[in-house]
Length: 141
Image 1 (tube, helix red, strand yellow):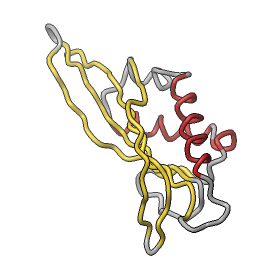
Image 2 (image 1 turned 90 degrees about the vertical axis):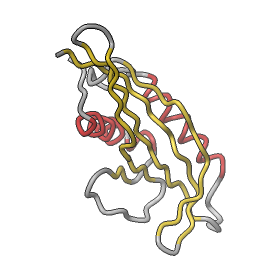
Image 3 (image 1 turned 180 degrees about the vertical axis):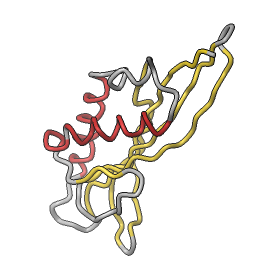
C-alpha cells in the first residue's frame, strides 16, 4: 500500500540514491541529521510540502514534494565542468523514471522541475541544481 508519510517516502528516496551512489558518481547523500560535508558531487534531500485533498468517499489524495539539492563543484575549481551538472541531472532523472512508485511507497512519482543554482556552503560558493520530486499517494479512511 502506498505511504502517506513524508518521512517514509524521503527515506526511500535516500535509499534509492544511496543504492546507486557509485553509479551516479556522488560522494554523499544527505538527509535529516546527517552533517553536511563539502564533498562533491553530493545530494541533499529536503522535504517541502504535503497536501491532502478529498477524493471520493473515504479517500484522500495526498501530494508530497521533495527537493534534491545537488552540489556538484566549487566555483573557481578548474576541474569543475558545467556539463557534469547536466550529466548528473540526467542520470538521477533516469533513475527515478525507472521506478515511478519509489519501491511501492507511492502511487506515482516524477521529477517535475530542475533549476540551476549556486549554493552557499559556509564561505564556499558551489555550483549545482535543485530537482523537485512530486509524488502522489492516497489514504483510505
